[in-house]
Length: 249
Image (cartoon, rainbow, N blue to C red; front, side):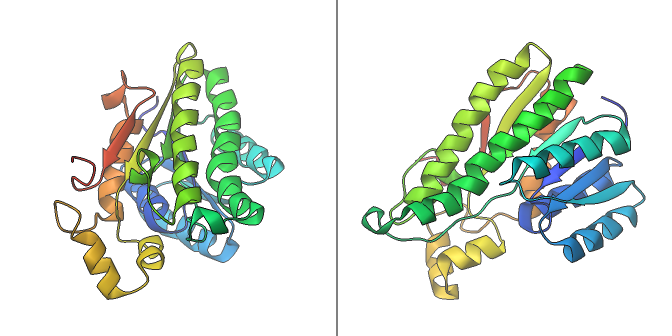
């Protein structure tokens, strides 16, 4: 990997994805950010360039293979290679009991969280295998290893992401492509606000975290950067859980 790696981030326009893009840019990486909203994407690319690095926004919806293929191909065409990919695009979907779930609700969650991760890895791995190596970091969740009432589809989707991660890691190893996942607990993002609904419910939710707070997007970005880097060169097929101790008991 070169001194200034080429990094592709899906779901880069908000939350953890955005913090990760900024963190890589501050380290001098050449960054491609992707998402569905062109105006926000161009503003983020401008902010990354203002940090002194090369950056591009490529509009893409990970639910559609043609768009994912185009995203990876344009990244490689622009920078000549792809060293690191962070698959951060995700949605929580609607909450509610299993008995009320619908095929439409299933598709709304799984098309982004699972199919989107699969398609992203498919084309990222092809590019990385052709060049002789690379590092992929998928974003799971604390809910990727446990259950939660009224969140069955989100929970199931993150379990699937972890299964995809482990399987792809075995396939990629022979070509020097590492595939890992970072699984955040509660993080100060708009998604956490949507999930908890009110300040009171959010405060009550966080009392179950041993560190008694939510994480920050920047804390998760630091972990993603470590997992993606040469410092973790013997790590593949792993899920790193960062949740303030929430899964310790």
